[in-house]
Length: 442
Image 1 (cartoon, rainbow, N blue to C red):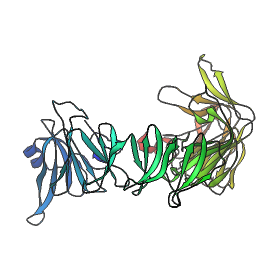
Image 2: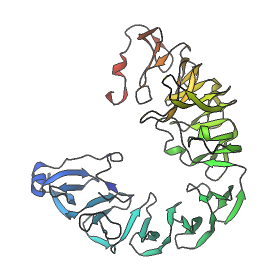
Image 3: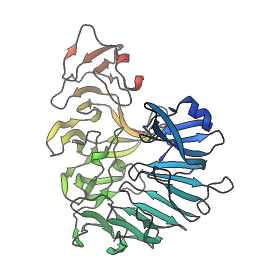
Image 4: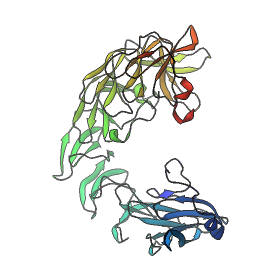
């Protein structure tokens, strides 16, 4: 099933939070519906037994009685709904094959009125800013919300910084244009970051980084050797509030033959910068990482050496050696957890597991891919203090998190467990059962 970014589609359950299959039985029978999704208060997208998609609108009639009107007839290969522009997209295909050169895209309002039928082979998608990006013959342009042409398809890439400025590419070089296709920054850059603050973005030319002021159209050199988009070893991180921050490295060296994992690939002094290039966390660490909680960062100091390690099953993995130690700092670079541990895991918003001893290695088993530790002893911090002694062999986690309580176990008695509250109180009597305190019932 074809999809257009920016539209809510039925076949993408990972982004859908709307109810499924809630239509009354009489409506399902009337329209031969086998699948449906409520995408707004009164609009439902559906698929019928012939495999075609349409849209129903709920209407109140005769007091509390409701009825459904079919505002987009079920004759399409796919249907989507964009809440931001309150617009329905429907796609018709030829010979039952998805082909960008022959597909026909239709756009309706929430009353079922046809707003625009695009010419064959032309498609559009609505981005997070409400811009309608047009694509034809592999090139990109821009419509306004009435589907009038603002920018003819002429760019190899086109993505929005906001609803005024766009990053575009020609001949594999990037520049910045306005919504009226006026040049703002020449096409001479190998990379432009699409996050902005104070009307500035970070741009890259000949491996040098600059902060570009889109209003004054001026460039300011930045003192970084490498800027990396936000990534994290922590499950579920970085979160939305961290996506306009970047990792920055000075005195950087790069291991070309190393894995893409940035902790293995780059050496230097690490920090965090804003989207305009201003420094948020000073570049004074030997590694830094984002966490789920955007108010904190995991940091490392010391000789962080990454090399190959042969485990007991004769598999080679990346491992960490040297005298590197880990801690936690807040967004103002205040120390929260001292930089004295051999590894740290975030398991709740302000709950961190700290380790002493053990072997840090990269787990690249099937469906894994993250840094972790084996061996050693662990304890738990709650954002204020160490709340358990560092004497445990394991902590009960579900989806890499803890819920309600901290359940920890010692190596010599793995069936037994100790329980602590998040405030650090140890529960001796009537201990909670770990199975009753997990996420997703797992």
